[in-house]
Length: 345
Image 1 (cartoon, rainbow, N blue to C red):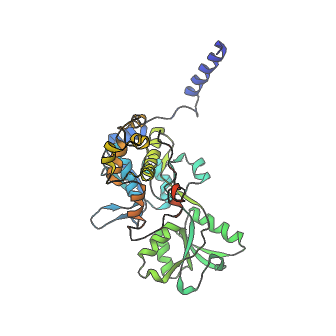
Image 2: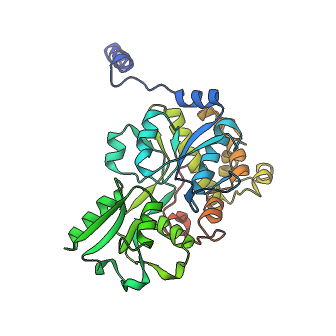
Image 3: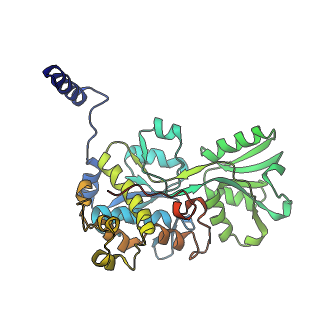
């Protein structure tokens, strides 16, 4: 390399450090704040979302979003109980993140171009591949979304669902009347009171809602899925270290399922597995945790506390839950789904 090229590279590096707008982010600022506070501030749904986040009569939180928050807390603080849950309506999520009221949103927020590009936010991956659908009373005799011309449709204000139904009805040359609510609970109440013909939301939300209705058999989820709704944890863009920790917490949960590492077997596999991937994942080789500023056995602690992705899904949404939702597109890629962990190497 010539002296001229060396000088040019040095000047470029110096410019990147001092030029407004492209200065390096405050690496570790969120991590430091969480460590000093001694707890993670995690945004979840309102505490009534069966399978996602529920607060029981003993003050205990449960659900898929809750377990993911606990996994991050274990990674950062070594303790699944060091989480303060913030129940949020959808309309409050972005503002809560931007203001610093929460560190991460684990609740259902669809990853879209506009949200990603305009709000100084990062999606740290996808934990549920969802899509928008409709639920209706069997009494109205509708078998398909294509039968909904002129229908009244309950929908959440400001959501991608609101935009998607406009696109869907327009593309099929149909009309509808929106009945806008601020929450799942409000929309469900409007539906059950007959104020709208159908309620539209993510399929997982509708399956959850149907399982908790007084007479679930009186309701039908229509077969059409009219959108793609990739859901995942959201963080501010200000701290790359924290973004990486959230991203890799999700990835190791998925990788553990793929490699057969679960809550029951993880401790034993630390000592007995000779699989190089498992050894790296569980901290026996590679010094991987240190690269994130974490203990090298951080994955062992996470899996010991909450299990792998499959265990989290099954107990909250799947076969071991009240909801019994199929994995569908959220199955591992090895089982025909879309979940694909990034290489932990």
